[in-house]
Length: 332
Image 1 (cartoon, one colour):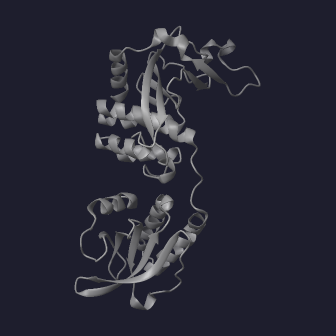
Image 2 (cartoon, rainbow, N blue to C red; image 1 turned 30 degrees about the horizontal axis):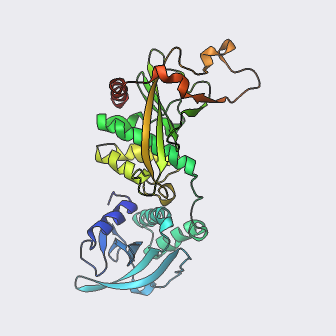
Image 3 (cartoon, rainbow, N blue to C red; image 1 turned 180 degrees about the vertical axis):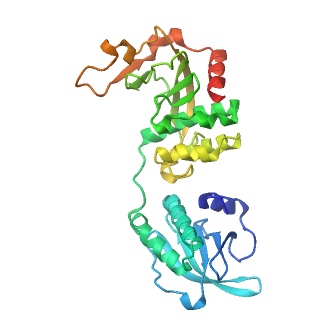
């Protein structure tokens, strides 16, 4: 099975019954332990769960639950025979992504020839610290806000062309958030509906590509429990429009989000308040390297950050037609 565990569990929750082979909702992983195939399952509260077939003689060997995950031995009828399973279930839904990584490690070990008990206990040992401590640190609101702003723009781009995900360069510490050929786009996001000031980081962030075009867009969002804009929802829309899921997840991982549905990145949602796009060109209010004496920061100055009031850039606002044209140039 090529799908990620989180995606398989999502499908199981949606269908409710799995493939109907066992009396619990489950689906075959296609990976055998020698005693049967490992199965993805969900618990009574839709918790992610994994069933690993073992020999009857191995049941209970070296098993230990943690405060965040239960591990016991279960027996289920599979056709005409009864099968013994090591039964793992996450009981802390905030740790679903960590549990998904644990399951990937278990399956990988089994495929490499480890016994099912050793694969399970060894993997739990490797992940025990995360499972005990409650996973990764909470993601700051500002980081979620910034990602949602970029994903919102990426959704607009994929509406123009499915290959637009290739143009998302922001996660990889490139100069601009989006770049294709001679066209670039820098995205700023604010949680204030009346925002007009943005922070510019570096003397090259508003430097246009040579002989190219640079757009600056301000995405204005409002935090709302029913806002509709979440990391998971935007990623689902992007992939649904033909966006490359592998490239999308590679970008997410580069900024610390291991999966679009990772709970710390989806704990808040936003509603769109507005979007303002500007064309950065001669006369636009900015400070860039080419304006500095000698084309470089003064000796001893290594970092430049300044605030830009877009009220002074009204003459550079893109018309809806020009904004669409710029999107198409980046989308490809």
